[in-house]
Length: 467
Image 1 (tube, rainbow, N blue to C red):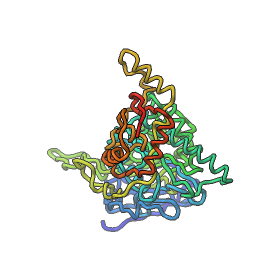
Image 2 (tube, rainbow, N blue to C red):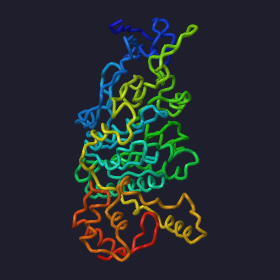
Image 3 (tube, rainbow, N blue to C red):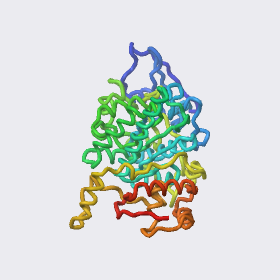
Image 4 (cartoon, rainbow, N blue to C red):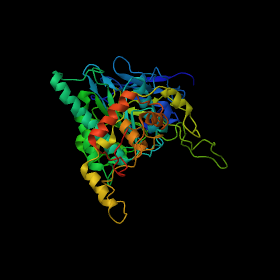
């Protein structure tokens, strides 16, 4: 068979809400279930197509043109089964709104590669990104140095989210004084996104910062979009209990950009009950292995070597898109096989330039209560103190970009050093992609002097810089 067979069906009023895909394939005498695509049409029509092979199996590599925002604020992440573009909106130029996004899927379904595509698209489109990679930085390691802020622990994520909420509030105050009711991109503020990968580690039941994390994300979703501060989370589950237990949070996310990759067997009921799918609707499952023919093997018949190999990474449904019941797939992002270090293809997509924006000064959002809790633990018998309140360890320069103030305090000894020596030390501190100008150095040192003393993010002794 070399051509696509197409059947146009008349359906009952209201269309077909649920159907038996296996029974349909048996009726059409097609053993490979992935070759048969059912889609509800307009009115009382539905279309059934039978392809020679699954049309989503051979995807091309993603390009920078795909990952550059178009005039309508969208980037192209992949295609639907019929070749139509799969787009993801990062900005709505008609309303001036940033977006709220969520990506769900099981382990190995392709969330990390999709995250890389979104991060590259943001950098390529001049969007400032503050990223939390809660798999200790392993989910998207190539993003180090490619985003304005990168954190890898739950507490640092809370500080980052506090900073984003503070920025949204600052913009609201500033725009109100200007008489501006909406966001105008780059006039004067850039479009900003907070992206939390492996968000379930922050929001699941029992997580230390669950309540505040859900509150901060909810605040960004509720107030940030109208001032150009968006939020995107990627998680392994979609049930409300795994997202901070906040119905308000779920309600806001479902109005943004929601993508569902391969899911667990119990997730469909949750999607319907949470309101992401209309009641009565069902999605054709995304199998781990596409193209496998379920049949009884004869005596001594051996399966092929790749019979158990997962090959559906990147297959998805765009639940808030115009074709929520149609399967799509992302383009290939990076190398197909694992690489021994940073993936060179992903690094090529990011390119050599510095990322847009400045990092969030995490130390500015450590509360007095948290500093006191750490001090109390230091004065005790040496125990670590309350894990919920302890400030984060100082990030290593090579993995987590920090503010100029942080870099100075990490270098400057208690006895001080000269300005030329400090400039030379900053040039060699592992942040060569973020050079510090002499004017910035002078302004930062003046601010530190005005404070008199400033706690470092790792909670070590106060110091007084002298130049």
